Image (cartoon, rainbow over the protein chains, first blue to last red):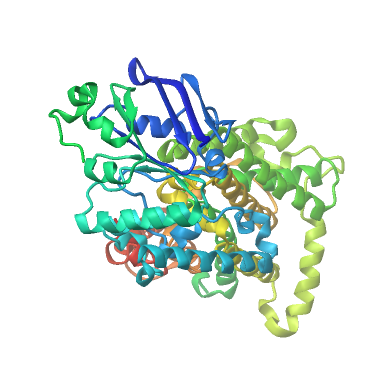
Length: 257
Length: 326
């Protein structure tokens, strides 16, 4: 299987504090890969580097063989690499529908001069709205279409965040702690949604997550980070038995399943 | 007869409300949609009006061409302000925008050979011996006055003719703006009010959206500047002090910053409070002389704003529901 994302020896420090040091990842197309590690291990920093929110001091990041290390977040998103945020960022004062429509790509209405071509705008909006409704149905938020996103609960916001990212028609999704602070029933639902999206759209997922059980269940490959660097990687099962990982993160030996 | 009951006075108040309506509409695009706290909006009015006056007086340009150039200049001013400072966040942008408007005012104040300096547009170098930019326009107004005479009778003054033009422009601009607010361009801007990272992560170039909002708002502010110049026939750098920007802020806060239709209402309300209160001839206003009353009106606007913030914080037309979302 070819790699969709290659992170090669990426380093980043903030005024002397090393957030990432020589971190490398290879993500296979169509896979689910998770990054685990203790707090402050540099997982979110790595996400920020990949998504362009910060740029690396050194190293390279290739997405579909295109160098993205110096690109802006919006340029990276347009290439099909879309991220969600820790804690699910929704635009509270936009409706649920508007939140999703925000992600529609190549919207002619995004150009100010297009105000003079209402028909072109409307045709696009109508199609986008249909696609948005479909996505909302998939995540089970159809009853909130016209509500402000600000009234949604934490779990619903995560679903909206996911649906919105999907609206951007990504080929790869970066999910930052998608299961954090979510009740077990909703975790199940989220996993279900993820898997159905993956099957339907031939997506690649990269997750940062602490919920080990879920990580082990859904991942094809797991990377473990500590102190800014990747200390281990491999199949989920192999991680449980890795001494380095036990020392740095797991604390005690867990039973692999 | 005191000024308060003269129709001419009320026509003037309405005319000024119309100019403030257009001026504040430019700010509404920036703040109401994009949450951009521009405290230097008055600079756009100064740029457009002075550009127009200089082109007509010194370079003998056709008035309408000069008006167009003035509005373009305001747009360029917005582009300059945006390109240099929009990467600053919220409050920092506001501070720099005040500085920008003051720099523009001081340059106008001190460029005697170009702008007429402290003496205003009367001192702009002219090849014709007199520094007036309204000759061509006055003929148009006289023409309109003639046409509206059968309808308005003795009220068909110069101000009345200009009032009609200004409010017609304001209505056209209001309609344009409400169309613009329904586009996805506006939706992205409303998202940037709350968060930059989300729209950027979805492929939107947040900087470009903000920049285009500042330029659009500046162009609209520039149009207000042209009407201002045409109403007063002379320009003075002191007309473009920072307080004028805050008048526009009062207008959009009174009307409700997130709604276009709040702007004309806010402008009328402000125009009435600001100009009208100076001429109230009953107690407690009669306890003060006219100079004191000039300050009293600003205090009254302040009290009205405080009252409004307590009772209706979203403004007259604003959306309350938006304010309680966390």
